[in-house]
Length: 89
Image (tube, rainbow, N blue to C red):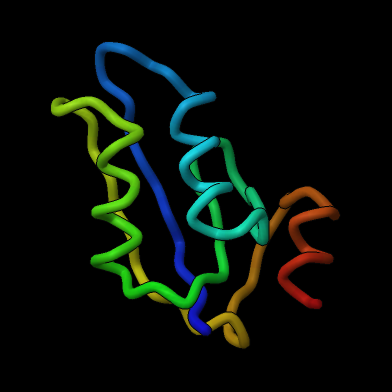
């Protein structure tokens, strides 16, 4: 099981609900959203598989970045308590 940070820029058609639905699906609804366009998920997939899955939820001009993270090594400032609690659990 790995943790990934997913960030994106939706360019023309900004369908945030669609990308959110994809992220929730690929993570089996195990995620936190520490900032407006960043999600942290837990998945059995590789970063490449996560990216490829999410390509179905964005447009060709959008930007998507998926990176594996060390969930035990992070710090934050002014992040919502619910995201902090998720990251600590």
